[in-house]
Image 1 (cartoon, helix red, strand yellow):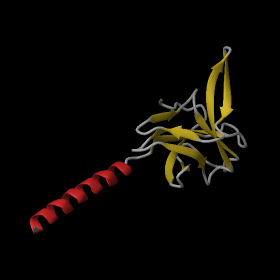
Image 2 (cartoon, one colour):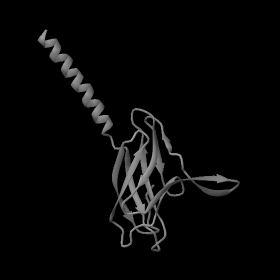
Image 3 (spheres, helix red, strand yellow):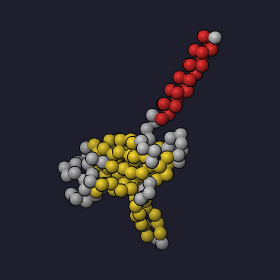
Image 4 (cartoon, rainbow, N blue to C red):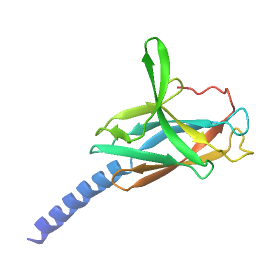
Length: 149
């Protein structure tokens, strides 16, 4: 009887550990912030979001180095590129990979603290509809610098 209990406990621990490890997979990777060329102009954040084992919704991004942050989507309409705010959050389907990249979906960082330079860390905090938050340190890039995506 004791052997069965130990086996069951080990199996439970292994499943729990696997679930914990899966949950610990980085929900945000490749984070960079293109710093503004002119003080007072906004910066732009680029990163990759990774969905976990259930559907989720990103409702906001914030940074202590910015006064306010907005998510934007870029679409082609009638031969013109238009940028529209993502106001009611962004669905992140289970297991999905969603890129925020140059020329596409991105986050704008307004009222950035002066003095930030290439190589500095810019903290981005991602808030999800279920209340959990994820903070990552993005690398500051020079204005016009190559974002490698």
